[in-house]
Image (tube, rainbow, N blue to C red; front, side):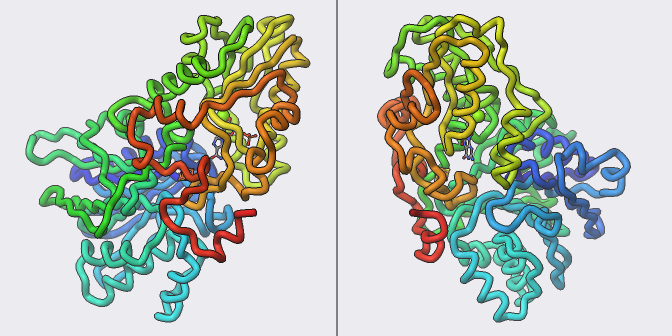
Length: 464
Ligand code: 5GP
Ligand code: SF4
Ligand code: MG
């Protein structure tokens, strides 16, 4: 999911949120929503199924007045794909409404939900995000201020959560103790240099689009509170540690977003350099599976000296195929999405680079299409190690038995997807490109080493 928040007295916060969400569309395409607060503390919310551009129009945005806004783009990891599960989640409290936008996935939702239901909390959906919002509401009811209420709710959460929370007086931003999902802080200049407007967003690309300046990332286990008095920050978690999802860097986040001090384009280029060093092969051209494989393919080409070309044209108006929740929709999605260029491919030995193989279904179809378009050899190179374990922290990598590398050796995968050779970037190669301590990342989908322990009943739902 994508989350966004803005505190901007005097500006139309809904429009800033709209543009921010537009830039975060890749993080979720099922539904989108915005809640705004007027200076009197009155809230307005609009959310619906679909892309940001389909959900919102000028008249709808004009009906969202106020200087504070919280926004969300969703793809479902817990809870089904329907409008009741769209966010922000708005919960009434004696001090006014809170509006919560959540990215990540809790692993203790079932237990957490039970404790709230025991307090007669009127939970409406099955999402973990609603549970967090109501837990904050309970603390407010018990007389706590916004800040302490949010901390109290966070202390009951286990799992991944980057949160943006709106209140009648400000916005709060939180990251879980491991910082699994990203969250960044930005500012928009005002006439008073001591009083900028503040922005919170999943990725820096959402700051760029509204002309905000990237200040820093919110730290794992940190809470920030932004009000008319400015910004305050604290560490709410007892033992924060760095466990950013490495898949955000490899694939999920936009290449023009910055993490760890550089654009993810540069990072992915480097993955491609290492891939090229590890797995040279004689061929006529390097192509990418667009768009996510492009930076690594260019990197591979730079290292190998084999020219990079476009061999597959993507229909830009089709969303990420894996986001469609059912297998049947996924299959249609792939055919709608990519078309091979016969005049580029015919008679050529091709190296095709992708960022990851998850189920293997995309790769199989692409390889078949390349051969039909006349490629004489197809060599696949993947800029991450084999995905063998499912994610419990908010990226939909499916159940373990659906992950092709969990059950199949690399040589058998090569045969199944129909390539002449297949090479995954090694674990060492990935670490070398990352250039930092592997301890600072979650990489459980490659190792099964989950940094936040998964309760047994939940494990059984996804692991073989
Ligand atoms: P598959 O091997 O499942 O057919 O598709 C691999 C493609 O899905 C790659 O192009 C990759 O960009 C994309 N993908 C990458 N990460 C994920 C993920 O976390 N979940 C899913 N379902 N797909 C992903
Ligand atoms: Fe990211 Fe994989 Fe960890 Fe999930 S399990 S948070 S996708 S690295
Ligand atoms: Mg891809």
